[in-house]
Amino acid sequence: MFQIFKEHKGFGKQIMLLAVNDLKKTYKGAAIGPLWAVIKPAFTLFVYWFAFTIGLKTGNTEAYHGLEYSKFIFLLVGFVPWFFINDSITLGAKSIRMNRQFVTKVSFPVSTIMTFTAVARLFVHIFLAAIMYVILILNKSTDILTPSIYNLQFFLYCPLMVIFFVALTWSTAPMAAFSKDFENMVMSIMSGVFWLSGIIYNTYALESETLKTVMLFNPINFFANGYRKAFLYGEWFYENPVELYIFLGEFLLVFVLGLWNYKRLRKALPDVL
Image 1 (cartoon, helix red, strand yellow):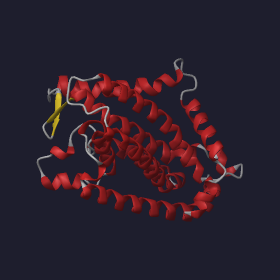
Image 2 (cartoon, rainbow, N blue to C red):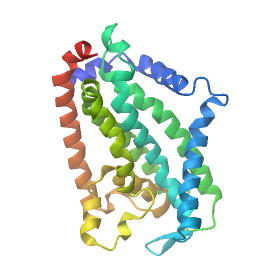
Image 3 (cartoon, rainbow, N blue to C red):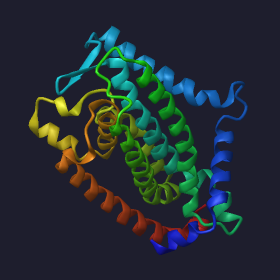
Image 4 (tube, helix red, strand yellow):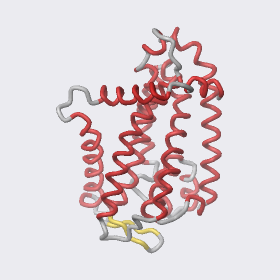
């Protein structure tokens, strides 16, 4: 842990510059450039809203504790953290392989590669979250508790989400650098993870108590529910202590495993790459 903190010390400016450069590379050559960061999520959100509301006719509202929200708003608040989580996991796993020049050619703190990759996605996330917040304020057709003091929980869930998935990449990025199969496996399971998380449905409303309990062990579900608590439900993060304690246990586990994996694989990375 101290080694990783040491590697980050004094590299704050470089991390920000590399994060910006990473975004530029992502949208390089595109006529509308960074606007794709909004257009792509907006199109994805529209497709799912259309599929469930118009195609499958599941209804145009979602209910929670007697309050009703339009399906679009409900999906919007769930998708905003999902876009960051999905990119953090997939691009984070590929980050060392994609930035091998920092490992093989120069003396560079490798752990910062995963950090600036996540920071680049964080820029996009904050922008999307700002757009979401404006939409919530302007949309008063349903029981939306925005603006409210509960919205301040964004400043808890967002940093916690970034730290959690950066710690996860301490394990996945070095392992993906050693094995292309591992990287492909991560890419493959993400579509399944999406459907097993509460992005498009309310996991608190599941009929099976067993399944409802199992869903509490999904950290992605924790953040999707957290954002909805902050912007829709009007609940504090500690009001479901079981969910909170389970996440904190998973956070500690991911953090420790990340440190262990990074330590045992770090020195071999230049030879492998």
